[in-house]
Image 1: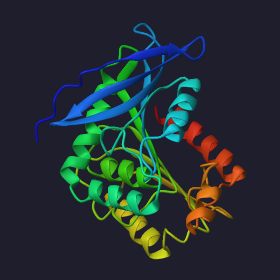
Image 2: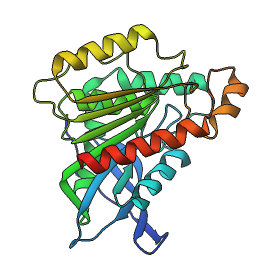
Image 3: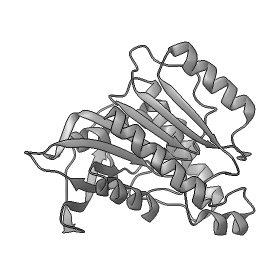
Length: 257
């Protein structure tokens, strides 16, 4: 697959004294993608880069907010676009359709993720040797898949991510993993957890797996409870679990990047 070098059209503004944000357009093959960067650093003060992968709803304000928060912690972040053209879903049927399509072509899925990684590495404030990734729900599955398939990542954090699709670990994969799951999440079965843990154990990758009591699916997203009620889905925000998981991530990235 041919991956074209990103062509950027940047609309930048300063959100605080040390963070610059900008929208970025880039391409994979012939398809256009719309991402968002929050950068903290300079050519003389290169800092780690973090890729943020959105939920199955697509590249939305929530993913961009997380990129901003990472920049506030001192990182450079890109909230990527896995669906193309910044496409988002308003209904679970569309979200399921988009996410299934993304995983139906693993080669393309990796290419779309790697395009964002390479774009992030090219920023003058980024240390290209210190790249990590975080993902939510669908995004958690995306970052875990790429981490176990040899992506150039030092650290990966999955928040309430799907685990059932991780069947093998490619030789040479070295990313350290932090997997934060809701203990009451019915969308992640005990069988999926057991199988996933066995795969990672056999690969000898470094992993910390955390089950947060009382947390169900999408526990980090303040909009989850309303969407859960609207569509009769087991989604609910849990403020305590959100804060605890973010602090776990902060410590993990600090120790690995």
